[in-house]
Image 1: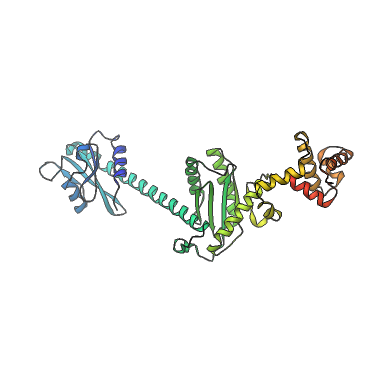
Image 2 (image 1 turned 135 degrees about the vertical axis):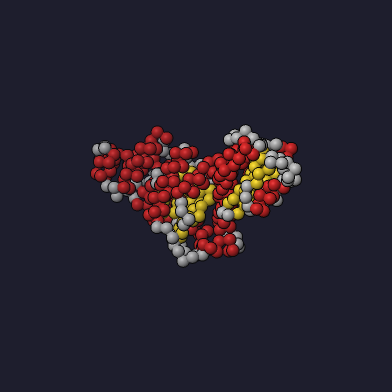
Length: 360
């Protein structure tokens, strides 16, 4: 394992605030990767190399004893039993040796933090590429064959009202996903979407997790996210079909101005059809059906039709829900017929009016 120059610099810069002595970070060959004494960067230090060979702390009392060395202490940095580097403190042994153990421990902690972050970023990039391959149906089976199990799977897609996430928001969302999802989930945030693959997880548990994630995202970036969940499947080659079904579920939420935050594609009926209608066609349909209704009266008739539908076209029940006399309901239905040329009491006309009002 080799520590990068960038990581070495970061570690030394953090440690230099702890002690007022020059610090040196060596690779396994004894070369100084980074130092608070810039003149020493890139030079060879025999004592550091000896530290690696003997796997023990090396003190330097005489600068002639080791090539390139100055007085001080050189300590092996060990991760999982492997010496990955050496950290050195320049100064008289009696003065700097008391810092040896704490500097060693702090260095190892910082290295581990960097390794965790590196692995996290690697996983993040791999997941993004995995989903890009699955969504675009690329022939890269070797990448995702580990997902080819007999376990029940679900695809989840999340979007906000803008259908995009800023880069800084994407990073925060990814951390929220990390904190809430176990190894049974593969996830990524890219192209304005949250994409999740759940493997062998009960759908009820998934929905609870999505509710929690949604609330945390809103708290952190003040954005409301909506999730579409696919039906279950087992063959990973069916990912794309189920991903597309999630998009239909989300479009259904959008087209019908629904307030649900999580919608399950497998529970949709009419929504499967309505969620697939393009925005420009919805706009044209609404213009044709509702073009003569004034802005002032629009919400009055919209509420009327929605409640009329909820009450199975019962005038009496509709009047109760609207808190008006049933003659007022009759009057408004007749008025809507006169304006649009469509009679709400006629089944075909009612369907046209209902769809025109509920579609966004």
